[in-house]
Amino acid sequence: MSLHIPFDNSYARLPDAFHARVAPQPVKAPRLVAFNEDLARILRITPGEAQEMAQVFAGNALPEGAEPLAQLYAGHQFGHYNPQLGDGRAILLGEVVGADGVRRDIQLKGSGCTPFSRGGDGRAWLGPVLREYVVSEAMAALGIPTTRALAAVETGEEVIRETALPGAVLTRVAASHLRVGSFQVFAARGDVASLKRLTDYAIARHYPQVEGPMGLLQAVCDAQARLVAQWMGVGFIHGVMNTDNCAISGETIDYGPCAFMDGYHPDTVFSSIDHAGRYAYSNQPGIAVWNMAQFATALIQQMADRQAAVEEATAIVHAMPDMIQARWLELFRRKIGLGTARAGDGDGALISALLDLMAAQGADFTNTFRALGTAAARERFSDPAAYDSWEADWRARVAGEPDPLALIRATNPAFIPRNHRIEAMIEAALGGDYAPFHRLVSVLAHPFDDQPEHADLRRPPAPDEVVQATFCGT
Ligand code: AMP
Ligand code: MG
Image (cartoon, rainbow, N blue to C red; front, side, top):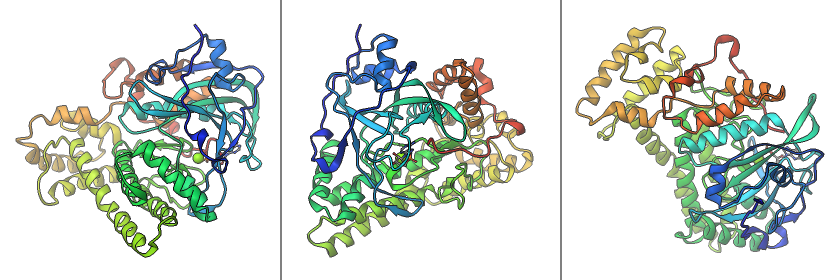
């Protein structure tokens, strides 16, 4: 059997201003580490022999129909505008339309230099590639919109970071790689023709039901509001919510220094470069709004009646905090087993009281929610008396709910990709042992199932296992 990818490219048809045509740079000795057969089926990709797939997913051999290119974009990084970023270490091979009718990008990440590399080496090392593979696939299984991982290969070459590390390439699959920064770059240059062209392209590809730039803004605000509420619901901290990492599709993109919280605290930050906590857990809703304000600012540059557009865009962006709050409440109600809404702010207060208690006692976010309504919940608290009092209020509220325990188990995962497990998995892979990687991938594919034989993966880190900081994948 020979690998076949049914390419059907559209981004490559856009004008030259949108991209640079560039092929991946071949590597010395590619070896296939992982191939995602379930995803391949959705994409209607026919797998080939491991050696052939290693060549293709390392960028050594171009599959038929590929039109490799690097995309241009800009972006605000930690609040500061960078007028030109672009794919510095990623190459879009092309698009496929899946069995589900969805068009998706097939992109190699870590595949060598492009005109946008800005002094970087265009490469990735094995750790972040495996991390993104595991975490993005876990997110998909949790039901959260995300880019996915089709394949990972080792390159057989070294990448120099603080030390020499094994190089790797990830094949990333995304509804598209259009970002807020894709619009910003044209808006900032005053290239209105390209901005209009991109707006039309994004609408046709992602939101065909909407009309015009303001329709697109509304749709992306909705998608981002839903997304950030879902992140909050699983204790996910993206870590680098720059506008170049904010996808128009509403998918989670760019798994650099991201992490899931163990013990709950709203101020949690992992990223080693996020000194001010700009992208801390509880800041994420506000940053999502800030990013949409940048998107609005870019979109407006193409509007004939600028004043009217500013007013309309402002109204849309200003409605976003309430939208996020509504999504958050809807989700956290279900997390505590409430299938029905009750008027007033009683439910919000009940949820906040639990979170305050968890923060004060450092209770494990995932395990506490999963255990609610059972004796195991109170064991998460060092001072169970405070929890008992909350539980009494909760019992009074859930009385009459159809099946709170079933809802709790369907909404709160048993398994998340815990940081210390990811670090240990990477350590093992560096030593040539991929068993922990494959185990994480397979257990996290079913995060809502108990899988008692894997109970050790549910444990929060012991004090000496706690990961203090995470790093960008560069
Ligand atoms: P990221 O932090 O992954 O969102 O990347 C931000 C920007 O830096 C993007 O334009 C990347 O393409 C670029 N970049 C990151 N790592 C590298 C690298 N090793 N070589 C070249 N460009 C890179
Ligand atoms: Mg990025």
